[in-house]
Length: 295
Image 1 (tube, rainbow, N blue to C red):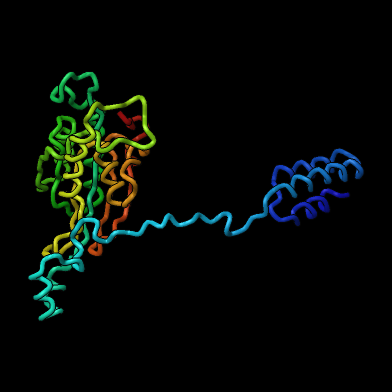
Image 2 (tube, rainbow, N blue to C red):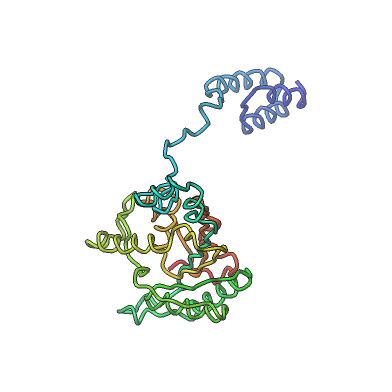
C-alpha cells in the first residue's frame, strides 16, 4: 500500500490521533504490506477504545451562578426607601432618570514596586533601586495612555506611598490621596489552603478592613457623575486580587490563585448598569524583562 493511500485511509477515520497516523505511515514506508495490515489492526483497536466526541461531553456546564446587578447596592431599580417609591408612583419618569448612573468608572489598580524585604518595620520597607525604576516605568506607562485621571489614591504603607509619589511626577495636576483601608493584609482564608503562609488570627480583622475598602472604591458611578472617570489606586497584591474576585463575583477565597508583578496595572471597568469587566490583570508588558519582579 502506498504512503498516500495509507495516509488517506487513516485520515478518513474521525478523531484519529496524529501520533498514530505518523506511526502507521512510517510502518508503511519501512515494511511490507503484510506488516502494515498487522499494525493497522492495532491502530483500529486503539481507535475503538477512544470515546466518540460529542458536543455534550465537551461543553462545560453552566455553574448556575446568576450575575447580581445590585452587587454594590446601587442599582437604581432596587429602591428600599418608601418615599422614593411614592414619588416614582406619582411621576414614574422623574425619579428613575435622575437616580440612574450614566457614566463609566475605570479603576486602575497598581501594585507597589519592589521593596526592601529585610526591613523590620513598615518605615524601613522602602523601595529598592529597582523598585524606584519600576515605579518610574509605571508612571510613564500611565502617562502614555493619555487618559484624564481624576485622582491617585494610595495605601498609607511606605512602599505604596513611595510608589505613588514617583508615579505622581508623571501625572501633574492629579490629586494625591492616602488611605489606611488599602494597607496590605490577609483578606480571607485562601482555598486551596497554603502551608507556607498562615497569618495568625488576622483574617477577621484584615478581611473586614479590605472589604470596607472594596465597598468604598469599587462600585458604579454616582448618578451625579456626568463623564467617565479614570481613577488610580496604588496598593498591594492581596488587596488587588481580592478586589478582582469580588468585582467579578468570583469566589473571593480564590484570590491567592493569581500572581501580580511589582508595578503592574490591573484595570477594572464598571458600567452604569453594574456590569464589570477586567480589561487587564497584572499588566507589566511595558517593562523590560530584566526589570520584572514579584516580591
